[in-house]
Length: 272
Image 1 (cartoon, helix red, strand yellow):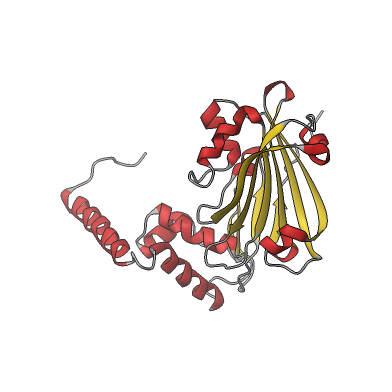
Image 2 (cartoon, rainbow, N blue to C red):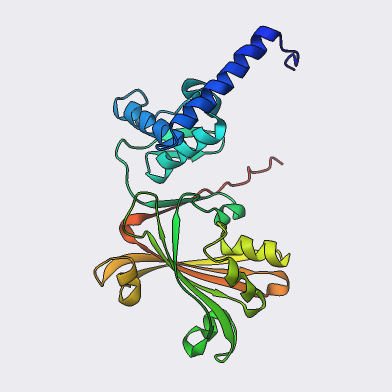
């Protein structure tokens, strides 16, 4: 266990370092500090300081290297991850994958809670929020009657610095939770978590389905794509207690802007 006592010289050094860090982050108000660090790391990766296949230094070393907080360093690494430059794996570290950034939306799944992750710096543009009759076409999907009224939300998501949306979401919320409409686009949390927090109801199970599609109609228009562009559709159904369906999300991604990664761990065989 480390000695918790700090002498005056060390204390002054730490205080000065914190003040210097705050000063630097204040100076970078126009260009956020994490973006400056992201740019520096990108340059080092391209220059071969961290070649493809190698690992970036641990977070604490990057904090010391750039004299920045953990939060700031994490945001810089997040940008690298979203660009496909690096990948993060528990127990391994942050691995350099390429030197060329992409604009794909990458979601890595290793546990159920990862389904609720939200891109902090994504921009959500809400197109529609209103109660609607389900209709025969959606009744089977929503496990209800055609005349039932559900809250429908349509939105597109853009990544920071990108003009064209990376995703089109068509969402149906069970009428019991329709009051969440007042929070849509205002509180930066996934609808699933908003519902849990607002109504104190827990999501027990999520069923998801992947399918290929030719993007057309309003979806193609919203994503600024030519009709017929290949895409990936992820349909998720969120269930609460007693298998009650609470929320359904149908998200369409252009094929060039989506990468889905899943990590599965198998139990080691038992020795008899």
